[in-house]
Amino acid sequence: METDVRRAADGTLVMLHDATVDRTTDGTGKLSELTLADLQKLRLRSDEGGAQAPLTDQRVVTLDQMLARSKGHILLNLDVKDAIYVQVVDAVARAGMQHQVIVKAEAGIATPPLAAMLPFDKVYFFPILINAHGNADLAAIATAQTRNAHPAAFELPKMSAAQLPALVAVSKAHNVRLMVNSLWEGFIAGYGGDADAERDPDKVWGRLYRDGVSIIQTDAPEALLRYRATLEKR
Image (tube, rainbow, N blue to C red; front, side):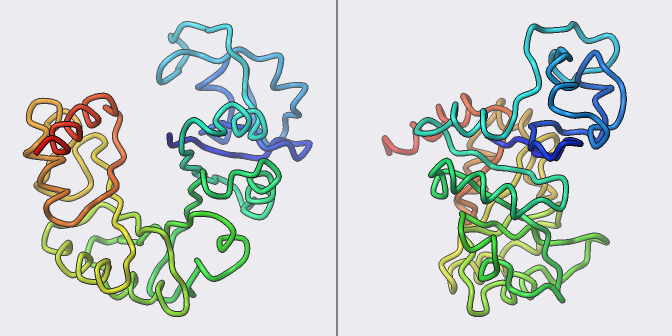
């Protein structure tokens, strides 16, 4: 499960996507100016949030609470929104979940091999390959991230399909898996996204798998699991 981590005003690590609480709760203000006590007074809104979204009886969750509930059950993909990687990985280590949590950070052509550096060497680490203008040499970035380092996977950005074969070659050469999002319209041009996959899973998820992608992030996990079960029977 992908989820987001930020730091509140008192240093508590909490699970919240936005820098403010306006969209996802019945409160207002910057998260960085609110303490955990302030946050615990708020109620979360349903679905994508927004002023018209119904309020729930759920409260903002801390990272420690999320780790405790998840331990032994699911893999967590933590999107760390602030410069709090050390604190996040420390919390993961205290919970004994180093092998149940993914941490990610962006990597460009000049970025040193992050998987060999503290604190990323303590958890499953995925460099997110930067493709800001759509024409980055992603295979070169991936190769640079394997120098004296072994990331668990590369997270692929929005990219053209023509860039995939070179990345697959790097993946195989260094035994590093490839992860891609099939959210929305999908991150690899021409492959399709979740809506397409729910209509024809083999055309989207099957094609990704056959072409070298072995980790898929989706908002349709039940459908992906059903499709994977059909592959296991073949």
